[in-house]
Image 1 (cartoon, rainbow, N blue to C red):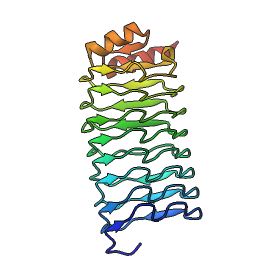
Image 2 (cartoon, helix red, strand yellow; image 1 turned 180 degrees about the vertical axis):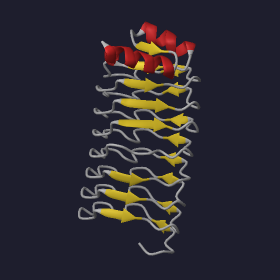
Image 3 (cartoon, rainbow, N blue to C red; image 1 turned 90 degrees about the vertical axis):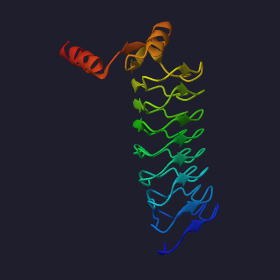
Length: 220
């Protein structure tokens, strides 16, 4: 892409099945929806640092995508932005992200761990729906609610660090999760402690307690 490019319209490069790598220029400030959707050979993307939002369906079904460098000042990840990016194992969400919308990472079947920044306040439903390899998640301190089907079908989820400010967990947030295998660190959140007791989930009050538990298990 040439320097000076400021906008790429919706569907502009959708279904370009031989496109393998994209390096977006710093002049680019806005993308339309579904810009790279269904690019089944796309494996690497580097964003312009001027981009503030990843639009709806941007990488929908980019099944070969493994390497994504997001903009440093990103604020929103829209609905289904990375839907069915089934080869994506990791992604670093910038600390500036405020909102992650519905199904943003749904069916990312290779995604293993993720950290949601402290500035993130809005989470949509089903963000990690179908992420069957997801094992470890840390959720930042601005989140006060886990939406419906947030971890739906995340059968390998083992470690979860929750915000001390979390006040609500929807009844379907953990549908399809083996709660007997899950361990939560709740940062002394009494609501989470109570929820864990009611649902027979192992719960540590602090990170140090969690680490001590791991150490004692390893010594046995």
